[in-house]
Amino acid sequence: MVELAPFEEYCEFGGDRVYLLVAVARTKENEDATGDGPAMRRVVEREADLAPTAAELAHAASRFDETYRLYLTVNARDALGATFALRRSMDDWIEARIHGDEGVRDKFKRVDDAFLSTLQSDGCRDETNFLFDLDDASAAERDRLVTRLESHTTVSLVRETPNGYHVVTEPFDYNRLETDVEYELKTDGLVFVSYLGE
Image (cartoon, rainbow, N blue to C red):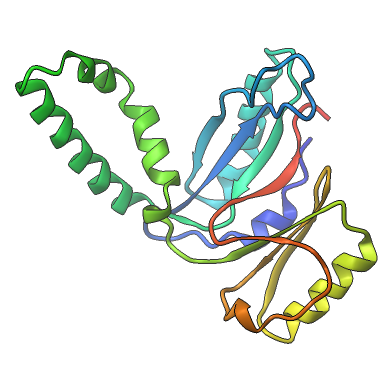
């Protein structure tokens, strides 16, 4: 069973704000894979949907031999904005089809996947939280970074990952951050939730 309490507290739903839960089979855990496997994505519209959606992804992942990681989008997504962005793309598909492009026919068979991709795109985020990704970091390094971050912004979530830690903050002028802890900053990414099947 996936522990979702920290994410229920973290996520802010309402209006057209949604999140995506994403299950990914990474090459790090799947030695025979030639690349990261296809992602399985599900939209979460309300807090009460987090657990059932995670269970649905766990069930879907259990059908495969690969080990899957479960992630949550760091930033809420704007579902209405994604709908209009997809409609603009579909207008382009129609125009391409009118001009003889036969390949766009297949796009109309995968509109649901296109919507999820659009929803996950940078242009459809509904906020701009930061994700500090600490690979091969110790708990002491994580704590030092969190202390430095708290002098600049609000730390919203800290998660242990298979390779280190994810620290999620509200946006701030990160150019003023001084620390000896190595990190990768992502302004729109995925925060680790758990392995599926554990």
